[in-house]
Image (cartoon, rainbow, N blue to C red; front, side, top):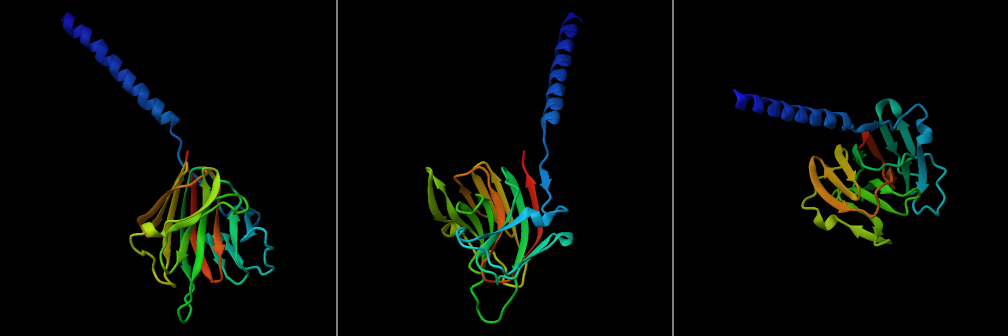
Length: 219
């Protein structure tokens, strides 16, 4: 009987410790927060920036935002630029679907989805949208120096669907590590030289639609 009395308090104590730890973990968990890309004042949340940023922005209004459908259309007729979402992000996920408007012949479709850019885009990281594949390239900081890089060489296959069909990109950045998923498969993971930045969309001469844009900030 004495042996049993000694064991029960110990077992009870261990149970209490386990329960306390579980409650503590639950109390400190912070869920990812969705970012509203189309608030009531959404026109003020997006800014056109020329590429390079020293050039003027075209007077042609080539971007069309449809807040009710969470859709952005670029006519591609207003020069080379990017449309920046004005909220700087730390760790995040970015989901977007896109498709080019199909044209006759064999045009060299080109556009892109930016992430971890600085405010004017001199530091930039882009998920390429073209016919030769989806991959990451850009200019990032390496040892404090702005350095060009291109991860197309690590792309094992071209996972993009042809113009006129929807493609899905998922970008995840945690710290300096960023991963691009193209139509459900990881294509590239890179180490950037920055831990925060802006997302955006590129205009480079072709009509392109973006829809189902979803951003979540990670704790």
